[in-house]
Image 1 (spheres, rainbow, N blue to C red):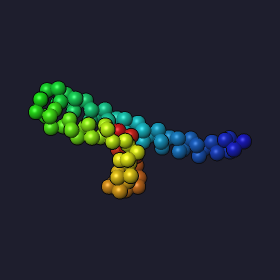
Image 2: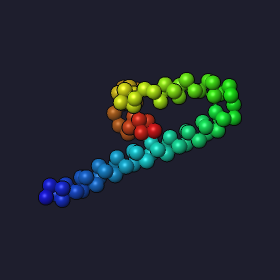
Image 3: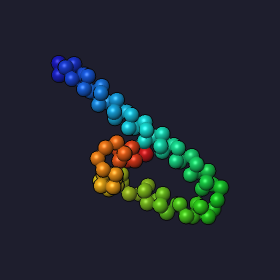
Image 4: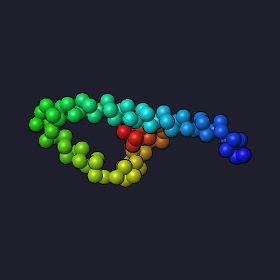
Length: 84
């Protein structure tokens, strides 16, 4: 009964979450493809970028998320960055 009574809220909040997730995914793809092309094209660029990429891969997103909240504030921006 509660599910049916709150269905409009669930759909609204579900859409916001889906939007943030898809925007984060699109941003990740838009960054990853040119970055992959640049890394495979230039050994020097690969040596420059790889340590930073490894840092973000090794550190859990749960540890980075609070920093994004401090840096970008509360809103959609840190959520999109964490999703990407």
